Length: 379
Image (cartoon, rainbow, N blue to C red; front, side):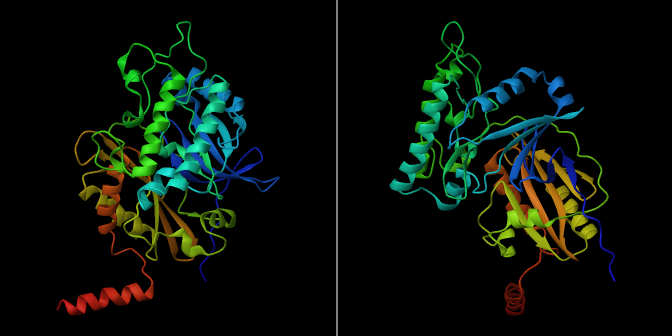
C-alpha cells in the first residue's frame, strides 16, 4: 500500500496559505483561507529585502495607504496587512471570476449591454477614487477582475498616486503603453484624473470592438513592453505538494473537478492547468527537456520550475513558473503561469510547449480512442 504523504501547509497568523495564484515583478500572490471564519482570501507576499534593494519602501507604503482609503463595491478590498521578520503580507479580497482580459480574449467583443454594465461599474469606481484624490495610472483589462456574480473589481494599485503636486500635475511616466494617455509620455506633467479617463476610453473601445484602437491588430498585442525582474526562489520543499480540500474546491465549480483542467485547447489564459498520470519525476524531466529545446533557461527545485528566455521577437523577456501538485494518488496537476512578459508571447509559448508534452498528458478515454484511430488511418 502506498504510504500517504503529509500535506504541507503554512500558516501566517490566522491564515492557512496555499498555492501561488499570481506573480508580478516584485511580489507573489498566494491563495489563503482565514481559519477562524473560513473566508478565502488572496495574500500578496513581498520580500522586505527586495523592497529595500529596489528602493520601493515609499511605493509600498503608498499602495497600502491608498487601498485602505478606497472602499467601494467595484474595488478589490484590502482586509489587513501583516508582517514577519522578512516578509510583508497584504491580505486582499479573493475574486473568483478571473480577469476581464481573459473574457475578451476568449469571447471577443462584448455586446452593448454587457459593455455598458462593465463600463458603468468602472467609471463609478474610478469617480470614487478621484473623489478621494487617488489616481490609478494603470487601468487595463488585465487589472479589472470579475467576481462570481460578474461584477467588475478594479485591482493592482501598485502604480497609483495620491493628490497631485504643487503644480497640480503628476510627473512619473508609468502604465501600459497601449492604454496610457499621450501626455503621460510627454515628460511635461499630466493630470491624473484625465489620464485615467483616457485609459477608460481605450478599455471601452476594446470591450465593444474586441481589439485595440490605433495601429494594433488585435487585443493580445497590448503588452509590447514589460519589465523583467528576477525573483527569489521559494523556500525548499520536499516533493510535489498535495492539494488539500479547500484549494481543490476553490479551483472547481462546486465539486465538479473536471473544471480544474483546461478542455478548450485554443483558449490560453495567463494561468493554465493540465493533468498527468505519469510519475512526478517523469513530468518534471519531460517539461525540462521541452523548455530547453525552446531555448529557455530552466531552474528546477522540488517540483517547481522557472523558465526564463526571450520572447519570439527577441525584444523582451518571458518568465514562466510551473508547479506540480498531487491531487490524488498517481494523479498530478501541473499549473503553468506567466510570471513576467507579454500575454501574447505567453500564449505562443504555451501552445508550443504543450505540443511537446504529448507523452505525459492525460486524456479521457474517448480522446485516447480518437488519437489511436488517427494513427491507424495514417498507416
